[in-house]
Image (tube, rainbow, N blue to C red; front, side, top):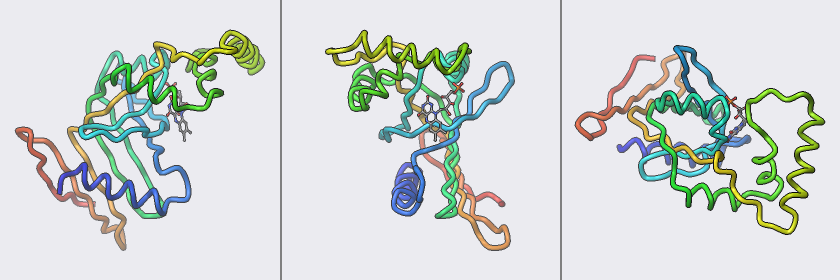
Amino acid sequence: MNPFKKFNLWFNLAKKNHPFDHTAFALGTTINKEVYVRMVLLKIIMEDGFVFFTNLKSKKGQHFNANKNLSMCFYWESIHKQIRIVGKGSIVSKKISDDYFNSRPRGSQIGAWVSKQSSEIPSFDYLKKREMHFEKKFKDYQVPRPDYWEGIKIKPREFEFWQQGDYRLHKREAYYLKNNNWKRKILSP
Ligand SMILES: Cc1cc2nc3c(=O)[nH]c(=O)nc-3n(C[C@H](O)[C@H](O)[C@H](O)COP(=O)(O)O)c2cc1C
């Protein structure tokens, strides 16, 4: 089976059965041989990749600028499944980021201006003050998308599907690209 098809099957199963946000995944980035992970949300599934949105000036954004190799990992406990994806990131078109930004609640749009994501701030009050500043600034206007706030598409070169089995005999199925074709192999748990 094409791994994108299998991803969609499992993702939809998680949507129905996972009591929490099934779109949340751990995103792995690297910088200077250090590895970082944090949770983000999968917002768009494209034919050839998976899109999340973030502030490109954040830590993860800076890592992405230095190294486009990214990794994602979903775990849905309720359906006993994990999916790991390894691939390359690229910035999506301005139109895709604009459309998604414009679909967000106004408060979140203002939040994108308020937060200099991952930078040190003097206090939580400072954020409140910035929020008031941007609310005033954009009063009576549609909030524009900050140019540093964009979508990143991860185009997979490797998928691994993990299905919990009895007595640790889990089923692991990996897909990798060879001459532009997806090859499948089964891995020991
Ligand atoms: C469930 C969950 C979903 C999140 N989704 C996003 C997201 O889609 N985009 C984002 O930039 N940060 C998201 N965050 C916050 C990130 O985990 C992280 O704290 C933030 O992006 C800064 O990360 P960085 O300093 O590594 O760049 C989410 C956090 C949680 C717990």
